[in-house]
Image (tube, rainbow, N blue to C red; front, side, top):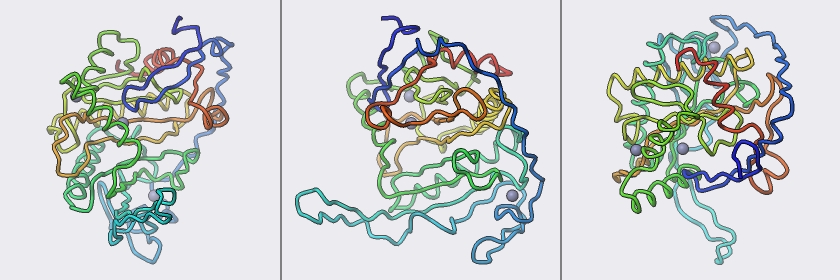
Length: 343
Ligand SMILES: [Zn+2]
Ligand SMILES: [Zn+2]
Ligand SMILES: [Zn+2]
């Protein structure tokens, strides 16, 4: 079996799930006629935007005239802190089970400027974003009712982002959500069996092979993982073993800002448009336990496949069976690497 031409399954060591790869289908001629979408030019300030400084939000609350980042509790939060985490087994046989989920949802603006994105912000300003993420993670993670803090950004209307103002969300929950729970189980088992860290070993392997590394710095590497599902998926890993944002040194905070700028600006060059994605950090649970097995990382899941408008859908076999991709992670990495200003 050859990974470059034969249909095969790849194992995701981090989630212990499989992805189907069909490289022969990507040998069809590249239909990469890049459809230029006219960049829709945003103003520096939009009087109708509920995230711009000084504007009013739902319920008539006014945003302050903030200068860097700005965080507030989501006006339409999916979670409420005063919920009781009690469990109901309605039928007594485990078929109708529910559990209260206490939590907090926040919105964080990256910049007062309505027209910027992580890819166009100055690295020093992204470092300020990293410091705010760190403070939020520390504050929310210290709460006894909070065991996990998920920081994520949906960029672009295709990903459901309703507002172009550069911002992310922070959802802090009592329970450990599904994706990090799967990764925790895999990392903990690896740690027990091999007395080492799954992602430290994986990153070392990627550095020895080099084919899937897109860009890097002294402290971080951006890799199209061997088991990537989305065409241009990326995994950003710290090169040092650490569990969360709060473990970063001041220099590493700047280096994280730098790799985020490299990745997002590389993405924008793929189809010459602001590249849509969902991204987020996976950090150790905040459950008052030392998680020596956990390795800090971020995932970027961009949906675009062939052009600025042709996206991948997770339907059919993927919805009912297992995720599938045509273009191999190695080919995607090569393409992204060629577009990265610093490799
Ligand atoms: Zn705005
Ligand atoms: Zn590690
Ligand atoms: Zn993860």
